[in-house]
Image 1: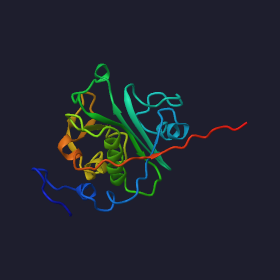
Image 2 (image 1 turned 180 degrees about the horizontal axis):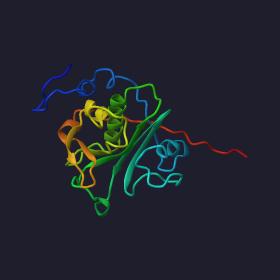
Image 3 (image 1 turned 90 degrees about the vertical axis):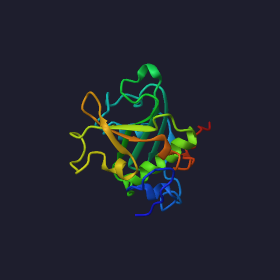
Length: 191
């Protein structure tokens, strides 16, 4: 495993991507889009946490970064305080990640999405980034959220509702350099 200890951070699976190996040096694959993008919505509709399948918007209230590529979707939410109902306020939330057929490892896509998040909001929040995994809804694996663990997240417990809570601390986020996502080009009607 590649890795160097920096400021007390332990090398772990996935850290190679944060240190410039393969993912950090590769071209950005994510394209920034909107919370109502119909192509992204189609993928969101197949995610197990989708509240209202078919609704035009698929992102929780608050600030957001929606990223998509062929066969994959990522949503970073930065909820307003009045909408935080978990024990990790002051954290960005990966509110949805789905890799259906991108042809890339999910752990690499996660690192790239975090790099795009850091390009949007350069300074990590106090509690870093959190995501919640319903172990009953994902493919059976040794570790629910395994792709997040391989990308450098840590298991930090469970929510009151029984979801696995995975967190990447702010100190570790700082080692993922910001990288701008691709931008969609507006299609203008000419008449």
